[in-house]
Image (tube, each protein chain N blue to C red):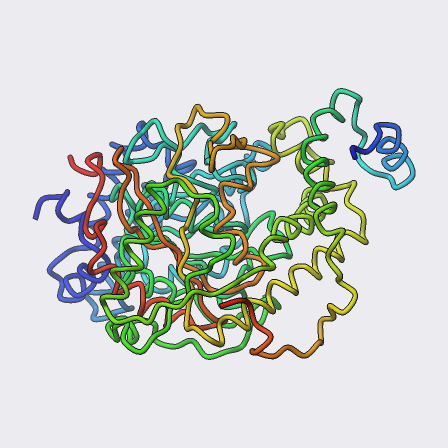
Length: 476
Length: 64
């Protein structure tokens, strides 16, 4: 099999071939490293590449397989890790200059779990400085480019991961999502991004994070692959009090149950208010397609979402506290966008912080009520498709909003509410603009009901216009 | 209404915040103004009965 064909396979397709020793983890890793080397000058998707470690891990996994030690579907699969997730003895920059030389002593728990599952880590992936933004145009490490159009952003902050998965460099990447940083790049790069329920996956080892709604989640090319990766990283971590000791179901078991019998809510408030016409058209077409597949479609109201912007106030206050020691250590090494937005947080009053938490509570209650009547919600993943890297602003519903810094939250307005509610939400590709840029839809479910999202997403994926499409740059 | 620079400087001084020059205060202003406009939006919202333990019922739910 030619390397390009090999790299275009999914994890679900590769796993049985690796188990049957028809495909060698060493050969697969070499092909992926070659693809990474070829595309790094174009995509700039890695901050640190790990050729030697990847080759060594691949040899270990191949030897294990030869000894009859099968570790599951991720064994021998090349992946990427966002560079704000700790990796033992490998620098973890968080996309910053301040931490450019930081070398953690131990792996984040999710890295440990991926290694135990036999995955091969190709490198640490580029991101927005301190994961604080939706462009992945990093001041210190350069801009990540969208594989569908190199002049456009890949989304952020996990842009390197989104670009790598779409361009068939990695088969999965672990990103982090505090406002849509997994689902955004997944949307803009035409791949699947899962932000599972808050508490489902340990955050231990996630660097410079927030106490309010950060998540580590997978980006993959298919829904089935997402289920496999989440399976590997999910579960209670007694050393991370944010995780919840609930059983982890076999996510893959639910994939083929179809849409019949499920109720899907279409919000009449907020999510469809400010959309690019091509995005709205693609998502509405997906709703129709899912109705044809048997889901019952119901309009639902989320009137309190008009106050959603207030929830970011808590984030402002969290941010200054999180960054305090780093600003003291290396203020001059901060990019101005992150620095001044962060410094503004020191003026947030405790009274207003508490009000923001009350608004968060109202909105959580509203979702809880609505999700008693429907099994999941469908929304766009972003109001607009990927914009040019050089754009300082993006037009949303006739008004220009900045792409970076204050006001740029408009670009992640569809994803950020699920960080405040903690509800599981995933982005699934649902078509392309006339200019060839990906469009995604978002499914939002009840707490710890990722299986329902996987079931719905898998059914839709089979009829999605995005099915099996890869960017031309993925080809040799 | 924007916060006066003198107020911000006093807050930094009295609450041991990060020093910010006059020029930098201008750079902080957009984020700060966003915060103030978000709070202004909440003025008409009654939050008095929002408690972490309040009972909710499905039939209170949003419009259909």
